[in-house]
Image (cartoon, rainbow over all chains, first blue to last red; front, side, top):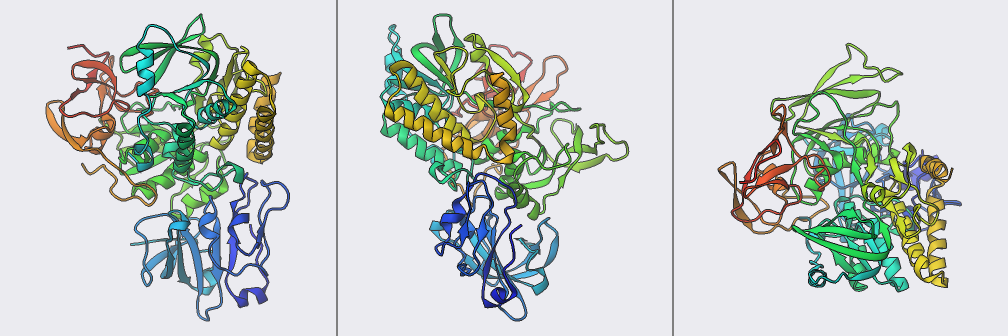
Length: 147
Length: 380
Length: 103
């Protein structure tokens, strides 16, 4: 799975996480980053690499991954972290909504509060949804559902 | 119908008038099948200058692309990151722009001794003769036999995808999916998008067959994937009401005492596809049994030429793979069919080289090793 | 008519006009141009035919005109592949029994 940035970098601001562990022929993430922080060395079946010094946590790469495997984590808030996910379901959540946070295997882990929803036309029907999670669950919560 | 399919215009009018005369129109190349492979083959051949026609049995072109709502993998040069439905639009727009002759709603029902095709369209039989044929008829979904597997509610996974994504109809409320290849992983995700519950995906092997990222999408949404499981029966009187699944041992034997009943009104079979090579049999092409490529497949060389020098194949009919590789093989088949008639030129050479380059890049993925070994077997 | 998807995150559905047709003497509404099988399933009807030897219920399997699991009698004609045949106003659709009978 993707490497983690240094502690120092994590304190500085949001950073991306790419959960793409298999060599599949795919490369749009490279073009998706306006900062050039994502690269695929060699052939396009290789795994993406992240330059955390270039990544600004700007979120625009999230809806560009065909595998919906790019997330952004922001650990800067003091008492919680924010996880941003690609979201292709209806109804779209609204800022301020509460939802249930699900982990990688769909287990209900915590209550989350929606902090941001970006649903622009250029994201091609895939919204970016940000929500607050307890600090220790930032690496685990990857989806949300509503009661 | 979904709007991208519905917006396609009927294309056959001109052709139908031509075919009602007793004289058969002649074409350089006739492409059978208007899916990703056939359309790319037709586009390439037409661009190179051949007189071509594409025959398809659906009212709209695009084959199975018209139900693929997810974004495709592949290379930037080849629609990577574009949804299948939108690739269908790009290809059909090119077909219209090039003014390629289309015969839609038309089923090819026979390949005759004099190298003509028999075509059934709305209760009327036509014949077409071409110098060269490209078959891109695709594949059909495999069935699985278990107790009550003939009950309504046991559907091909692709069939439900068609009902839901093309026609906007959900044929059930809660699904069980058999098989965890990419189709078995993508369709349940699309069911969730349509508001249908998915009880589980079951897989007889000890690992998921499709891509990690597809499995991850459905797992985090709360759908369990039961490995080393199979279905033993469907329950229900007139329609499926539940399924009984069981764990299997190392020799795929059902383990007694592990049976579990799962409430569902749909059982989706996603265990693979078989190439539709009936017409190729009829044409006398050599057919080989190569499990890696999907079972009985027409022999073809690197030029996508079959054992008959005027018949080419591409797409799922040649080997069960992905839409992205089907399109690339379609390009090769289109260019090579053109070259068979008019000889090689700079442009046709370039098309083939570029497509081969992309194919070998895609096929360097560990997921494609099966296809490569299957293609090796064909050569032997 | 509650089998129709009304809202979808990716797709938009454009449907033809609503028409009435007959299934086994019962009047049903559906959208013109959709395959008959889609209209029947939207109305909750899944049994399309009765098998010849053991009289078992049958539904569609492939939905793309390949498998012949969905053959029905339409306006007296047996063996119509209803996963492909478009719905029209006033047609009479019946469950096919076995090989069906031309009326």
